[in-house]
Length: 201
Image (cartoon, rainbow, N blue to C red; front, side):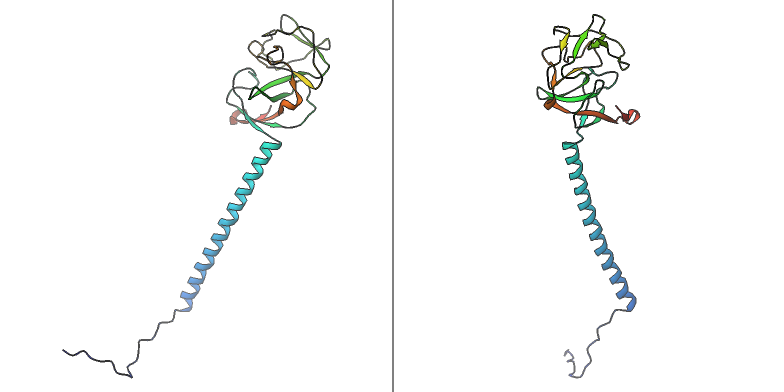
C-alpha cells in the first residue's frame, strides 16, 4: 500500500490556546508557590535570628543551669532547671551559681567582704554578732566546718552555704572557701522546670 502524501495546501492542526480560566488558575498556582517560598524563607530567617539571640542572652546575661545534688534542698532539688542573672551587689539570702574546679556550684550568700561569720554548735549562724534569719532552712547543723570561727570574709569575696547544712560542702570548709566575685556566674532568679514548681527562686 502506498502511503498517502500530504498535500502542500493541507492545513496543520491549530494549537489550542488555553482558556482565560486555565490561565488564571496557573497564575494563581505560581503566585501561591512564590508566596510559600517567601514565607518559608522569612520563617527560617526569623527562627535563626531568634535562636542566635537566645544563645547570646543565655551566654552573656541569663545563663540557664540544671541543678544536681542535694546541697540546696529543700529550696532546690536535683534536675530542676533555673535561670540566673549576671550582675553584682549580692545580698545575704541570694542564691548564686559560681565556678569551682571546672564545675558550677549553687549556694546561698551568707555574708559579704569584711563581715564576721560565726556558727554555734547547733548550727545557728551569726553575721557581725547578729543572728541570721533563715526561714528557708528545715534544720540547722554546724556541718563540715574546719575554719576557725569567728571568721572574717576576705575582700572581694562572699561567704556561701548550702541550705542542706549537714551535707553541704561550702565556705565552712577551707577546701572550697569563700567565693571570689570573678567566679560568680550569676544570681538565681527563676525556676523553669519542672512546670509544677515554676516561679521565682
